Image 1: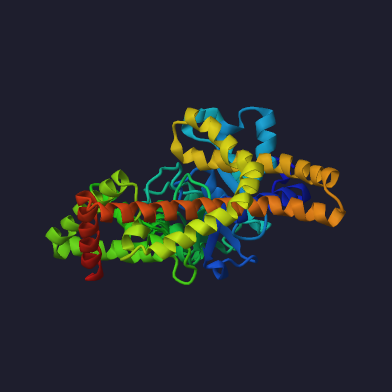
Image 2: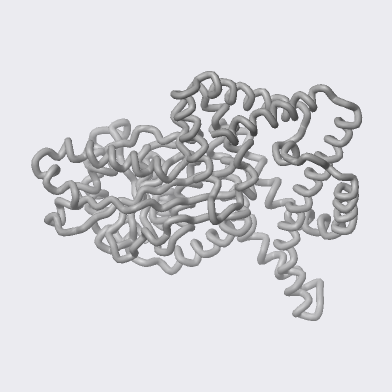
Length: 442
């Protein structure tokens, strides 16, 4: 598989995608929520436009939430060696050359453009991240014109007969870098390029600006967008404080709850600046104090932490400890080895990409080894298979065990602070309750 036939179906790629998809959707993330799949018509000529905040994971979010073998565009400097280029072409990634790559290199974009037409005609789906680069902020930045230029040029090159559509995509991670988080992907309503036909024939530049403005507005509708730079930290934290408990909600995903909260805050800022400022100040105070006291928002929401509940939790931890040890020992490598190179990577938005890639490679290598060892050590054969299957399942159990341990220890810590009449904790609790009351009035 090379650049010249990148749009063709690849069996090898399909196998790799299936394995990587299984690891991504079932192990790396604890839940993947997809909204708007019905907006994807496989018979259409589609360009996907996702927001770009989390490096490679943004592209994978699109790849692993719908069928097919879409083609991605990426900056050309990662194609420098033939070996690397061959891998990227196999992964169905095409280079895009920029001015910084040299004027001669820019001419190669003509070849890439011709190939994007083949991709669209073949109905693979073309994925372009229109912000151009990633940044770890929950805000849509200004879009580059490249996606609009490619769409219009492909439309014109096919005699204005190819009904190309751009699908705005919103991607949200409950945490950018940690494992076992929640990923939400929202596919918005398609934008038909044909609606700009008259405008493009009269003034192509104006049509591109119109399309870019419309695409930007549609992308914002499907993602968490915090406009304020001054109060960004407070608003971003408030999402977790108020809506964190809804992270796994499928019927009303947290992404939409966050959007409602942010819109109400934006209106409040205009109608009652003092209340708005008080909410921001309280949020930052709670964040700082909760970190100092090593407690989380879920525990603060509870009115009581009954001793019998703590005791039953401790008993559950004792009973499940052997299973936790088994799962931890055999899955430790998937959790810890990927962390080793992260200290040398300054851009933390690449951390989850490295964690995922390294853990996937380890799984591809070690899981067959575990299978062979199971058959070599355990008999009969059906029991060996059960042992093998139990390895990833107990790994997930170990992670849940760890979370339960944190909740129990956190609850006991709060009981201790209440018993000792810790003034800092009572202040934290008052601030939390006051903040929740202010938000409820919105």
